[in-house]
Image (cartoon, rainbow, N blue to C red):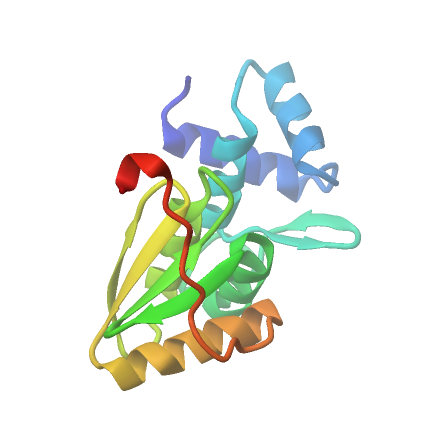
Length: 167
Protein backbone atom coordinates (compact mmCIF):
# COMPACT_ATOMS: atom_id res chain seq x y z
CA UNK A 1 0.00 0.00 0.00
CA UNK A 2 1.26 3.48 -0.87
CA UNK A 3 2.04 6.00 1.84
CA UNK A 4 -0.99 8.09 2.75
CA UNK A 5 0.39 11.34 1.25
CA UNK A 6 0.89 9.70 -2.16
CA UNK A 7 -2.58 8.12 -2.02
CA UNK A 8 -4.09 11.51 -1.10
CA UNK A 9 -2.31 13.20 -4.04
CA UNK A 10 -3.70 10.60 -6.44
CA UNK A 11 -7.22 10.96 -4.98
CA UNK A 12 -7.02 14.76 -5.38
CA UNK A 13 -5.79 14.36 -8.97
CA UNK A 14 -8.67 12.01 -9.82
CA UNK A 15 -11.29 14.24 -8.18
CA UNK A 16 -9.91 17.31 -9.96
CA UNK A 17 -10.35 15.42 -13.25
CA UNK A 18 -14.11 15.42 -12.57
CA UNK A 19 -14.52 11.72 -13.34
CA UNK A 20 -15.41 10.50 -9.85
CA UNK A 21 -19.06 9.98 -8.94
CA UNK A 22 -18.84 7.40 -6.12
CA UNK A 23 -16.39 5.70 -3.77
CA UNK A 24 -16.64 2.55 -5.90
CA UNK A 25 -15.73 4.64 -8.95
CA UNK A 26 -12.79 6.17 -7.07
CA UNK A 27 -11.57 2.73 -5.92
CA UNK A 28 -11.77 1.48 -9.51
CA UNK A 29 -9.74 4.44 -10.84
CA UNK A 30 -7.17 4.03 -8.06
CA UNK A 31 -6.91 0.32 -8.90
CA UNK A 32 -6.14 1.20 -12.53
CA UNK A 33 -3.09 3.18 -11.41
CA UNK A 34 -1.95 0.41 -9.08
CA UNK A 35 -3.38 1.65 -5.78
CA UNK A 36 -5.39 -1.02 -3.96
CA UNK A 37 -7.41 0.29 -1.02
CA UNK A 38 -10.42 -0.59 1.13
CA UNK A 39 -13.70 1.33 1.35
CA UNK A 40 -12.91 2.20 4.97
CA UNK A 41 -9.53 3.68 4.01
CA UNK A 42 -11.10 5.59 1.11
CA UNK A 43 -13.82 7.01 3.35
CA UNK A 44 -11.21 8.13 5.89
CA UNK A 45 -9.01 9.61 3.14
CA UNK A 46 -11.92 11.59 1.69
CA UNK A 47 -12.77 13.01 5.13
CA UNK A 48 -9.13 13.88 5.84
CA UNK A 49 -8.73 15.64 2.49
CA UNK A 50 -12.00 17.51 3.03
CA UNK A 51 -13.73 16.18 -0.08
CA UNK A 52 -17.39 17.15 -0.43
CA UNK A 53 -19.97 14.85 -2.06
CA UNK A 54 -22.72 16.46 -4.10
CA UNK A 55 -25.34 15.18 -6.53
CA UNK A 56 -22.82 15.56 -9.35
CA UNK A 57 -20.02 13.63 -7.60
CA UNK A 58 -17.02 14.34 -5.40
CA UNK A 59 -15.44 17.80 -5.25
CA UNK A 60 -12.61 19.48 -3.43
CA UNK A 61 -14.10 22.15 -1.14
CA UNK A 62 -11.90 24.95 -2.49
CA UNK A 63 -9.41 25.61 -5.24
CA UNK A 64 -6.28 23.85 -4.15
CA UNK A 65 -6.26 21.81 -0.99
CA UNK A 66 -4.91 24.50 1.31
CA UNK A 67 -6.38 23.56 4.68
CA UNK A 68 -6.97 27.25 5.48
CA UNK A 69 -9.40 27.50 2.53
CA UNK A 70 -11.51 24.49 3.52
CA UNK A 71 -14.91 25.27 5.06
CA UNK A 72 -14.51 23.06 8.13
CA UNK A 73 -18.10 23.57 9.29
CA UNK A 74 -19.42 22.26 5.94
CA UNK A 75 -17.06 19.28 6.05
CA UNK A 76 -18.07 18.55 9.66
CA UNK A 77 -21.78 18.77 8.78
CA UNK A 78 -21.40 16.34 5.87
CA UNK A 79 -19.28 13.93 7.89
CA UNK A 80 -21.61 14.01 10.92
CA UNK A 81 -24.65 13.46 8.70
CA UNK A 82 -22.97 10.49 7.05
CA UNK A 83 -21.35 8.82 10.07
CA UNK A 84 -23.07 9.71 13.37
CA UNK A 85 -25.53 7.04 14.48
CA UNK A 86 -26.26 8.26 18.01
CA UNK A 87 -24.88 10.59 20.63
CA UNK A 88 -25.35 10.89 24.39
CA UNK A 89 -23.89 12.76 27.35
CA UNK A 90 -21.91 11.42 30.29
CA UNK A 91 -20.94 14.28 32.60
CA UNK A 92 -18.42 16.42 30.76
CA UNK A 93 -18.17 13.97 27.86
CA UNK A 94 -20.23 13.45 24.76
CA UNK A 95 -20.25 9.84 23.58
CA UNK A 96 -20.84 9.37 19.88
CA UNK A 97 -21.38 6.13 17.94
CA UNK A 98 -20.54 5.49 14.28
CA UNK A 99 -20.57 2.52 11.93
CA UNK A 100 -17.64 0.13 12.57
CA UNK A 101 -14.30 1.54 11.43
CA UNK A 102 -15.56 5.11 11.02
CA UNK A 103 -14.95 6.72 14.43
CA UNK A 104 -11.50 8.12 13.66
CA UNK A 105 -12.65 9.78 10.41
CA UNK A 106 -15.38 11.65 12.30
CA UNK A 107 -13.14 12.43 15.30
CA UNK A 108 -10.63 14.08 12.94
CA UNK A 109 -13.33 16.41 11.64
CA UNK A 110 -14.59 17.22 15.15
CA UNK A 111 -11.02 18.11 16.15
CA UNK A 112 -10.47 20.21 13.01
CA UNK A 113 -13.76 22.08 13.50
CA UNK A 114 -12.43 23.55 16.76
CA UNK A 115 -15.86 23.50 18.43
CA UNK A 116 -16.27 25.74 21.46
CA UNK A 117 -16.01 23.78 24.70
CA UNK A 118 -14.26 20.75 23.16
CA UNK A 119 -10.92 19.80 24.72
CA UNK A 120 -10.31 16.84 22.39
CA UNK A 121 -11.51 13.48 21.16
CA UNK A 122 -10.57 9.84 21.59
CA UNK A 123 -11.76 7.48 18.85
CA UNK A 124 -12.07 3.73 18.94
CA UNK A 125 -13.51 1.60 16.16
CA UNK A 126 -17.12 2.77 16.39
CA UNK A 127 -17.18 5.11 19.39
CA UNK A 128 -15.83 8.60 20.07
CA UNK A 129 -15.38 10.19 23.49
CA UNK A 130 -15.50 13.97 23.20
CA UNK A 131 -13.96 15.59 26.27
CA UNK A 132 -15.60 18.94 27.02
CA UNK A 133 -14.69 21.74 29.42
CA UNK A 134 -17.95 21.48 31.41
CA UNK A 135 -21.18 19.49 31.50
CA UNK A 136 -22.90 22.53 29.95
CA UNK A 137 -20.35 22.54 27.11
CA UNK A 138 -21.01 18.82 26.57
CA UNK A 139 -24.75 19.51 26.25
CA UNK A 140 -24.05 22.32 23.76
CA UNK A 141 -21.74 20.08 21.69
CA UNK A 142 -24.37 17.32 21.63
CA UNK A 143 -27.05 19.79 20.48
CA UNK A 144 -24.71 21.18 17.80
CA UNK A 145 -23.83 17.73 16.43
CA UNK A 146 -27.48 16.60 16.54
CA UNK A 147 -28.41 19.73 14.60
CA UNK A 148 -25.69 19.08 12.00
CA UNK A 149 -26.84 15.45 11.70
CA UNK A 150 -30.46 16.60 11.49
CA UNK A 151 -31.32 14.28 14.40
CA UNK A 152 -34.05 14.90 16.95
CA UNK A 153 -32.81 15.66 20.46
CA UNK A 154 -33.39 12.71 22.79
CA UNK A 155 -34.97 13.39 26.15
CA UNK A 156 -32.39 11.25 27.95
CA UNK A 157 -29.31 9.29 26.96
CA UNK A 158 -30.11 5.75 25.93
CA UNK A 159 -28.12 3.10 27.80
CA UNK A 160 -26.22 0.70 25.57
CA UNK A 161 -26.85 -2.98 26.06
CA UNK A 162 -23.84 -4.82 27.38
CA UNK A 163 -22.88 -8.22 26.11
CA UNK A 164 -22.61 -11.04 28.67
CA UNK A 165 -18.79 -10.80 28.41
CA UNK A 166 -18.96 -7.35 30.06
CA UNK A 167 -21.14 -8.45 32.97
